[in-house]
Length: 556
Image (cartoon, rainbow, N blue to C red; front, side, top):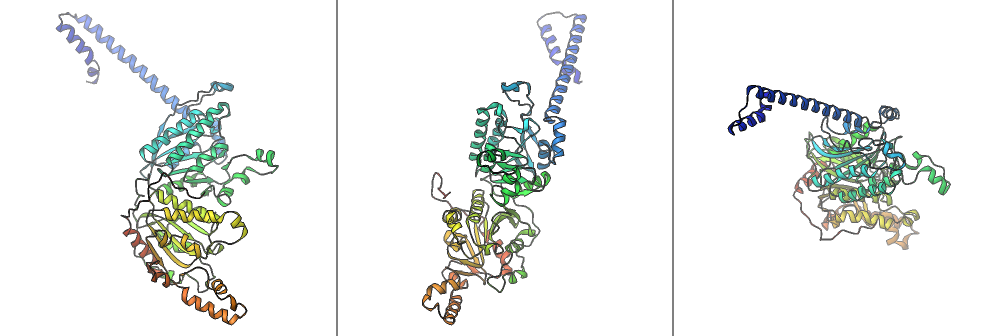
């Protein structure tokens, strides 16, 4: 039957000739039929050859720089570019673009080296059924170096991600710009940077550094929302150890200069570091599951198996009797969160403040919390920058913010003042005041001075501001305040003690602020999850617009 269908055009031709009065003999008809069959057979063979060539080309492209270089990659404990994509995305979901793209450089003998794909694998797939765009640089192909066509491939998926409203995940493993291409490679980098800028605040951008990332290449990850690194196999720096030695005479290793430990603990460039490629990719999948696809959508709501009104009796004794004794704020975060699940961001940097994501009733909530275990929870330059950036990310992508406050003030000292704590502290103040997402604040113990204002106070458009009965809201601690107010009695210890006790009775509680409406409710610690969950539930329809502006001018 199907063979007859293939010959249908021929029979139609015969019919037309007959209708025109052109007689056809039996022999002539058989000849034409045989010719048609032979033609189809030839075309079948031709198609088979084409498909065979396609298969071979695909196989070659998938090998990247060849089996030898792939084996070398594995020997270093690193996965190949395609293996990384397979682990990151849902099984069978990856759709590749531009597999056969090759560079166009003819200088320095490059015309003899034109590998398919040009050192980067690009395309889209899904993570837990939600679309993402991804590029994975292939170090086995010319060291993953960026050429004009390499950059063109990345730009293509960036444009598509912005257009279609889906996150961009970049798996970086590159030796930098392709020197043989000169300014064309630099132009390619700039094109990528421009799209990073355009995508900022529109779709989430995540960079995973899984090998070298040096020179101009570092600025693309730096613009993205989150940067993750792999311990012992990834590094980032603008100038490498050799250049540093030449210019400054400092002797430093690549790991010391730009390794995962450096960027997670000292520079704050990276948001997290993981033991190996597999763990890094698994954690990226987990993070994507917490984020919205773009700035026009809400974060995903996941099934939860925790009681929203759960009472935690242990929280009644979380605050120590001694006001100067520390406690772990993470305990409170875990007891508020659905199933005690907390995804922390920048865990190893500025530990005096905690940032990360939890779920409440299955919905993503950003958490900012002072950590009394480190520097007594004081705000400083690093913690202000860390929290401000996190708050602005949450606001950009409509993620509600929960703020847990126990802050005695800003860290004093010349190093802080010389380092610009005024301007950096203002960043956090600015971020909270600018944010239009639902904001719920719980003051657990101390909230002193300007730090009270900065930490999502009612005066910065906080929606629900709760306090525990242990909260102390004042300009400063009782002892310091007494020594200023009653300076004349400094020589009399008994009088100073009386004044201090009087100040504590008057201000070392949440009720003065509550009398003025700055605190909406003084709540029992055990009911914190219930009250916070109900607060966020009531704010799901919140609409707040800032005055029109081209953009703000946050103090940088």
